[in-house]
Figure (cartoon, rainbow, N blue to C red):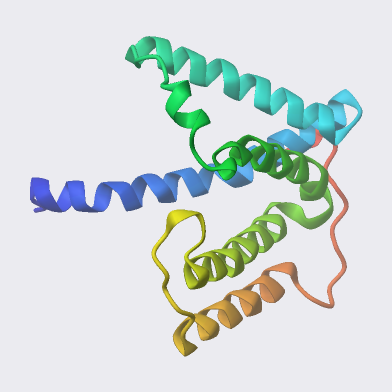
Length: 168
């Protein structure tokens, strides 16, 4: 059927799709725990604390060597913004998913990622090779925005948020 080489060629894409498939559940879970605890930031903190426990456990189970902090400290300033940006994403998901819905929130997240990725590639930011904007990339971005509008149901009323205990 499929060769081992084909399997391993498609494995990263499959894992990326699975990671993406988890995001609606993460956003909804963070929003629900935020509502249960009284504020979206409590939901974000809970998510980040659980993430920390999971990553520390993985480091221990996989017996990953200690990090080279000296080398990291000598790197560019932007090496350290991942945690800040991750916290902003998690807090945003907890606060905005009840208002936009999982689909609406994630479509806007993807649109923001694509816009920013095109700009990062165009200017070769953060050590990446420059990849100039093309007509095809602009068309792709416009199609994504059209998808955002369709998924958000522009012109339709938004459904009420589901209670913490009333999820499906």
